[in-house]
Image (cartoon, rainbow, N blue to C red; front, side, top):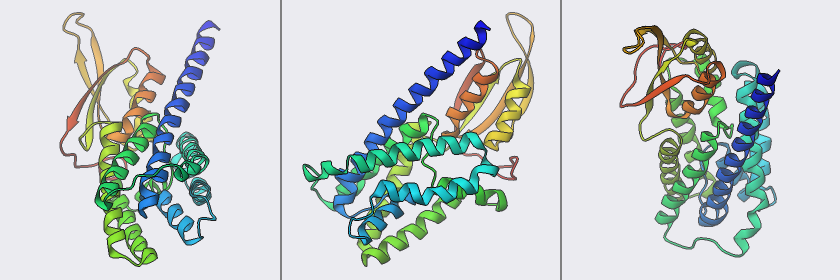
Length: 295
């Protein structure tokens, strides 16, 4: 009984920390949109960018955050059965938090916005946006949008990576930006911001490289590996090892994951074994088979 209460308290503290972290990241996202990107006429990528365009076309009558939330609702329903309740819950949490922050703090643009060269606005808007989203992802939340669409499509088109599908969506988005603004420059500046934000997200969330090699030493390696396969869609290999000091055999789990999947991997490992030993290394390139057919 005491263990159950302890686990509940730990889960409560973990959720409270995740909410606070998500709120902080959302605050930075709101600042990037309201003070930097929107005044310069630029948009972020994905659904948030589409919501920004709708806000502009509607004559500022449709709030960006509300538009982002409405556009994500069908994606949440679409991905619920396939991606699972946990992923959709985290997506809803991140989307709600960022949407509320963006709209509730939009009034601050009346008092101060960044007035600078368009290139600097695109660069620093992308940096701030990447920091904000990276913190949100680090908390184990997501902001839904094209991430859900790409994950769903990858299950049917497993010859394409998630990164390739997200790049495809961003290219389409830049074309839309150019058409709405009737300006090639607007699309190019937005492209700079989207590219920089995607790189900063990776650095903030999981490191500077594309993927991570993870070694886990635990007697629960089989259970951890099964959940990694089912929840992250990554392959896993169990290697038999022997402790040099104790001489006791330990199963060692070897897996390569995307940077953004590290928080979820840690959560899965701790769920089965709070004392699990984890070692993480940078991977410069990762190719080959996964549960879905390709890394």
